[in-house]
Amino acid sequence: MQQHHVGISHTVNMDATVAGLIGTGIGAAAGILGSALTARHQRLLEYERMRSARVDELARAERQALLELLQLLATGTQAVAWLAWAATSQSSARLREEIESYDARMRELLPKLLAAEAAAASLSAEAFDRIDPLVRELISLDTAVGTAAATFDDNADEATRSLAGAKPRAVELGERSVDEVRALLRGAAMQGS
Image (cartoon, rainbow, N blue to C red; front, top):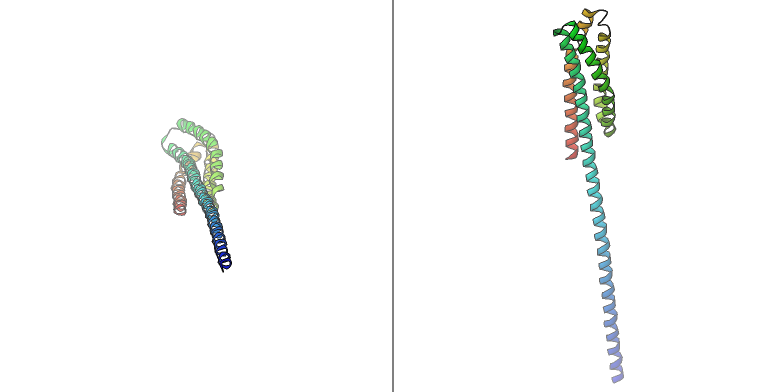
């Protein structure tokens, strides 16, 4: 009978050992799984932080590009309006100087304007659709002013009238430019929040 009792005790010890090993294995597996899940969660959080930072950077770049474009549009429309004002209030000699100054400013401005348009448009299809008409309008206005200015030496009176007539169009374009860029900036701000 004692032998039988020893066998039961040995079985109980073995069962306790196996149970301890199984418990240890489960604990180790849970620890490993917990570590893996924590690492995965950290990677997901880091990815989300990076994605959010990228979205913020794109929004900042779009705002900056739109503001630079607006500045160039405003510079161009102001140059036209100033020349139109000069046509109504300056002597012919002074107007000739203003025409030369205008020509130099616009030669410098237009390439920058086109580059700024490309930069702003590359960030958003909506931005391109809304700003391209403004850029085209300024180029058209500059062409009309340049054509009138080119005839100044041959027919100063007609050229002066044409130049003076450009002011309302320049003022309207300047106001519309501000409105369109403001709307784009508001839209970008709404998307960012």
